[in-house]
Image 1 (cartoon, rainbow, N blue to C red):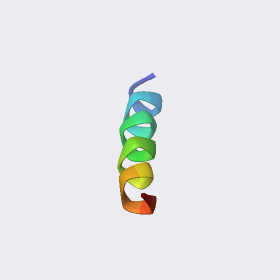
Image 2 (cartoon, rainbow, N blue to C red):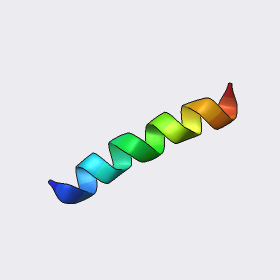
Image 3 (cartoon, one colour):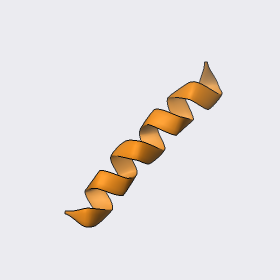
Image 4 (cartoon, helix red, strand yellow):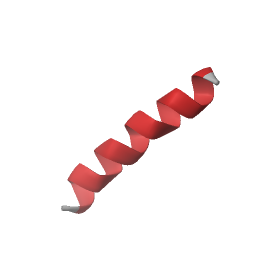
Amino acid sequence: MEKEARINVFQGVEALLKA
């Protein structure tokens, strides 16, 4: 569960970098 939360944050950062 902890890893999933971190992946969620990582995906958000990746979206900002992709934008």
